[in-house]
Image (cartoon, helix red, strand yellow):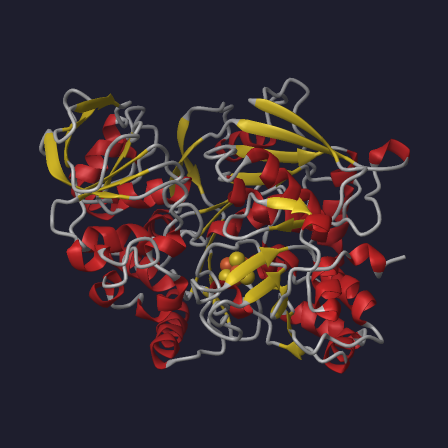
Length: 423
Length: 178
Ligand code: SF4
């Protein structure tokens, strides 16, 4: 089991026998998650299978529509609370934050198999977990059986090489978000369909866990089943800082790993990226987007609502005002992030600049509440999807970018190059 | 499942997302499938939800069902009476969801198939025939166990009928008992 890609290694470890790409396996799952958009159907399937106690730890989240914006969703919340209390699932209440952020902060560990009824479950791949999104029925079955079937994926290896000594640095104004937007444009929105993407190279090795989470979060936007980073010292420190150091396991691909494709992406001269509507794979350099007027800016979501994202945005917004034509919305990804931003005075920066701080959660990302677009309006968001209708109105348009580009855009009232503000 | 499925075509292009199939703005209707399905495909073809008849077939280009994990995307199509989706390729989660709810996904070249055509999916010969245009397209058959899940009406009835997940696999390595 010393050879193998990260995906093969994790599955082999957990199954106790070597497996290789292409095989169908039935594997145990270590964590199962669902939120108010997917949980009730998963619970229904679980009950239809005649089960009362889940066969694997179940995490439930009230994050997509929290606090409940309407009666139907308040009822969903009520049913989820009742199920959690009765079946022994872990419920994360309104205000706790976004499922993927909380999974990273408190639950995910290297080597685990995690399935979630949410496509961005792949975020936890940053910690070296084989984490993948599925539908409610698959998740209900995993709750009932404690196992699910997988096809062991082929792997695309991506090495990011930056600036400076050993290619470890990102040029000024460039963030993990720009790297992944650029990569998705290179691969296409189905360029990694059914595959694993293994992220590495000096620029990823040098990234902190927050940047790695941003990158793995968007693996699914290229169609991937999982996005994985090696479990290394950065992983160990992240777990130790949260009192979970005992869950650290080092994990690296074996020297003989067979990749379906190997990409080296040189980001030394890369400009910040902006993905144009209506598809995530339409990223272009910010220079080509600069000047497009924007009505709403969202900083947050499971892609970019972490403390380093808020720090970066606040650096640009400090002492400045949001353009009068723009609504700036800031949604911390979790209560932990919210509290830290409060302590550091970041929330004050956003509010003083004229922004609105939303409760921890998905905010307007999925178009349910808290910032639905009007007809013909344009939003620049740090989220991961810009499909038509994503923010609640098919007549609105969404541009995707980093928190730095978002903050610069909020100040200018039109898409702006963050490098002007970061010298 | 019968060996030959015949139906009328609803035609869609490349990159149909789950937000096209069932937009996030109807999040609150997820507990009421008939009400939700009244908005099926609303942002891709507003005629679909009213016009689809039981037995119709959805035909699309590449990466059908990309985006969110919402199983409701597969469920609203089933609720509208759709038996099968024929596409040049599928997004992974939609593909799994389709099988899990008993909706047949068929991967083949769909160029030239038009809206309103009479389509025949022949699971014995592994070909799709456009009877209106005389086109014949081959496809790689699904693994036998996946077809069995679809035949059983989805993975939950499959598990209940066969006593586990493992029976779906020829290797039978997993006891998978419920
Ligand atoms: S923040 Fe957006 S993408 Fe992330 S889980 Fe919430 S709705 Fe989904």
